[in-house]
Image (tube, rainbow, N blue to C red; front, top):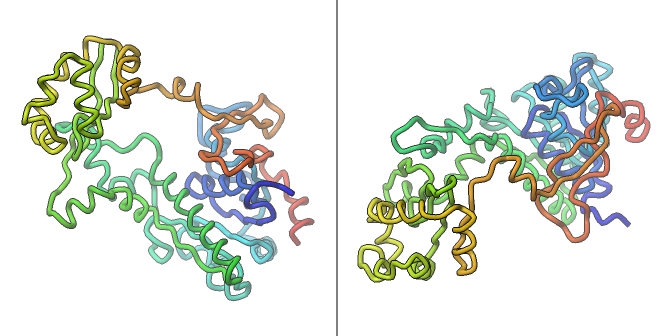
Length: 373
């Protein structure tokens, strides 16, 4: 038997671009049979996103579509819409990120399909909820979440996260909700509708920032790479670049003071507790900044890590990928091997990626229609 947890689960994927495809790729990595419905001619919008391309294939598309089979259907055509409906009724899970209302007009809406097949799990990913017609784009949603107001230098402009976190977090939330719905179906036989608004996912990331405002009337402020409730817990300039120093409690602070030959800091009443260091963060930084510049990042790691003080450099993307879990799959049309980042968790002995790579457009249309219908 396969040791992939979703072996035997069928997922019909009407999604495109990032949030939905990231979700369904992860389901494929966990063993689900994911069939991606694409429009004739162009397919998923991201097939054209670039450069860069690898032998005509967009690296953006390749990043979030491994493990799937591609079926081309023209949803403007009545016969193809009926084929799509039949495929949906043959699936365990349907995932879509149409503009709200579009799926219903196509005869592929959640209520109709779930009424016809009560065990079906139907997941909608949208900007603001499945009944709100406003379009959802990562940049727009990040801005509305309040997170960019906290990101960037204190006196500069607000920054979005360079990774598309509104899309990617929505995809992760959809995965979690679908898995919970599948678990419930195992116990009750009942499917249901899963509604994943992108904005809700971003607001949830505010976490302690939100409770500070909601319960203590404390509006969070932009403080660059520092932490609002712990200090020193920020980025410092070192001799050869930058280092993230994470002193999370008073014991770490005491050890740090000893290691930098400043034992008087640990008994100074201005610095002896986390709360006091936060109150006097500017003074702490004035003391630490020149000390941090006396060593290279690698030297700091060698000094502090054995004492249990977390620290590390800010790596470039190529540097970070040197130690990442990378998987390799065939190119969709016979080009060079495609490398991508594996599933970010391990479930027992199951592989951390699907066996097949990203599909060529429509490569599996006949195969899937024969199997599923």
